[in-house]
Length: 306
Image (cartoon, rainbow, N blue to C red; front, side, top):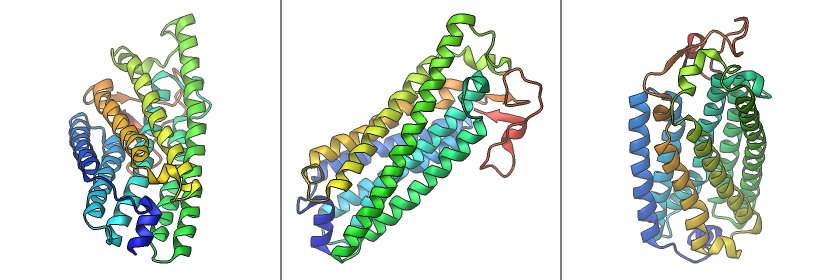
């Protein structure tokens, strides 16, 4: 198992414990801060998605430390591989939901999809990606060479699916931003959803768009790196040099976490921003109500907790 694990992830090069400790501390800090802000501001969906994602990073890098100290441990190898691989999927789930919220704040006429569809489609894709990558990581932990090869192929599918999903998301996201900018230049705030004008007046909202864009780009770069790493094989240069992992994996995700910690939805929207919501359309006829697709209690049917 030792040789399989080392060849599968480090190809005989044991990672330095210092980087593992550093990232464990960083992600632990981000987990606590994000959780505290989300609870304070009642951002429950962001708490669940980013809380779980950052906690998985903590567990993953703890596994990396464990593996550094004991490179014969299969549990340490699986703990690191699976947790660090799937964690960004949970982070993106939180961002997908934020996009749906912003569509409501400005108006569905500026978006190709309704808010419910953003949450439903992209989060379902996220869940599929999590299962595929997790399964691939589990298979790769097997003691046979065939298991490593099969697991890697499964992970490639999961990572490619994640990259494809994020690519589509970014096309929709930037299209939405362009429409908002054009509308604001021509007509100001007059045609935006009047039910959420007080949210649009908050000073950090414009910065929020930049924060989300940069965070998504960082996670996107990380996902492309992991896809290339897995596709080229665990003995390739990009897979065996720890510096690539530290920068393109650890640094990318920690920066994304820091940005979204500073520009947390709770800070941007304000605490207890329970906004009355009658329909999905900006100033529409009230014929449709919005309910979160993953909330059985229809929390969003009467209001939007942003």
